[in-house]
Each structure stands twice: as C-alpha cells, then as structure tokens.
Length: 350
Image (tube, rainbow, N blue to C red; front, side):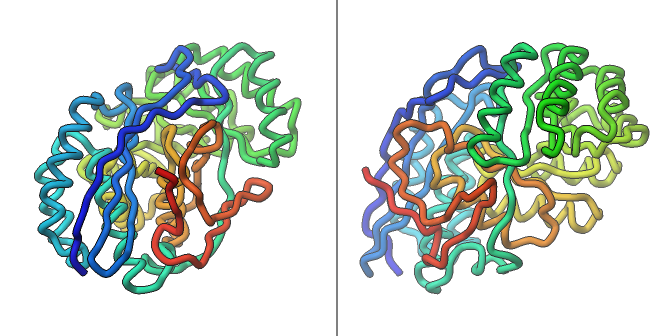
C-alpha cells in the first residue's frame, strides 16, 4: 500500500449546547483538523486532531504546524508497517497528542481497510456493543436536574455530572439528580479541582449514589491519589497518558485509568494504558473530549476490543451541530453498537 496524498483540513464546528465545566465558562464551538489519506490502491482513510487547550495546552497554530509536518512525512511511509509509521509520526508530534492521534487513526483505518476488518475486530473483537454515559454540564441544582432529564429523554441511562467548582454544591447536585432519576447510573467528574479532603468528603457523602468519581485530583499528585484510593468508598478513576499510568498503577493510586484518545496520542497509546491497567488489575475507562463522530468511532473500536474496559464515556459528538462525519455505528438507548464496515467505518463530507 502506497500513500499518494495527505490533506490537512481545518474545520470549526458549532455546539448545540454550550459546554460548561470547571474549565469552560460556555464554549460554543470547537476547532479541529481532519486528516485525509489517499492511497494508490484507491483507499481513503481519515483521522482527526481534536484538541482542548484547557487539557493539553495545545494551540491551533501548534496543531496546524505539526499536522502539516506529519502529512509531509506520511507520504513516504508504508502505513501497513504501523509501528514504524507511528514511531516516525510521534517524533514530529511532540507536545501535540491530538496530531499523533489523528495520524494513528488514519493508519489504523488503512490497516482495517487492507484487512477488510472493522476496527473492533482488528484490535481483538471482544464484543460489538457497550453502554456509554452522557455529560451533564456544570450549573445550578435546577439546571443540572433539567439537563439530566433532557439526557434521559434522549435515551441515556448513565449520566456523568460535571463538577469541580464547589465540592458541597456537587454533592447537592448529584443528590438532586439521584432523587429525580432514581434508577439511573450516575458518575461525577471532579475535573482535577478537588483537594484531597474535599474528594474524601464527596466520596463519603455520595457512597452508593455514584458509580465512580472521575478525575478528582491532578494525576501527577500520586501521594494524594494513593491516599484517596485507600480510603474512598467510591472507585477512583484517573485520566492519564502512558508514563503517568505506569506510576499510578505501581502505587495503586487509583481503581481505574481513563483513556481519551485525543489527549493521550491515539489507539497505540491507549492500548498501552489499557495493558498497564489490565496487568495491575485496574479497570479501564474510555472517555472523550468534544470531538466528531470519527473520533468516537476510534474510541468505540478500542473500547470494544478489550475485556478490561468497564466504563465508557463516548458522547463527544452528540452536541456537535455540523459534524461532517457520517458514522456507521449506531447509538440506541445509550448503547453504542459497532458496524461491520472495515476500518473506522466512517466517511467524511469534506
């Protein structure tokens, strides 16, 4: 297989619902870069560099520059030599995990097309569907309950409530949703903003009401995470990249590790984190940022391939108003169901 052309396409997408978290006052659009790879054999593969400056510190200028450098290098690579190709790309994408993810996706898309296998089967084929949570933005108690009810009307049964600004208010908000929707599974995302004592207080107050507490503390604060994990009655899940995953697993500083392909560098890095979690007998969670359905397809393929993935939060495309991706996976009553289309199984109207 020979690559003949690589195009980098900048895109801005609008959000139907402004994104409000401890780090975002009301984001209403996202900037990203699609990557299109064409081969001499007639295949077309896609990747996407979706980034959130509040999480990784990437800027549009950095992402654009790295995308174009990687596109130039990719023309001389054999995408079926996946390890070599991704090693070469990684050296040009230092500091821009979203770019590493974009080319990682495109190469795995081509590998699936060549093998005539959908991504989840190419990576292991453990299952073909999994239930996802959906985000409930930060807000007042009333706003939180209102949005939770709207998500319930959309068919979701697992709600991830954003928190991190006020620990006591987060407890009140979760309790209000639990009262309004008593048969739903609830998760709380602390956005790495709690102190150790606040995180302990939240876990004790919400024991039996939340399934997990995600990202309560910064991942680099391993001693505090270890203390929290030791005494928390609620499972603690931490978002990490591979090196941090190894430190946290070695210190038993969490009950689970969260993988977000856009922020860790793609499928290859995600599989490394999952292998660390599995070896340490920690759960794996597959999460997302605001991202098009193309990235959701990659995250879903990864989540379906591993028996260690216990939690999924792949709702990043749901509120995008003008996503050019046409996915073949299905969302039904909160279940994400894979298709049998080879590769990522998506086309992009660009």
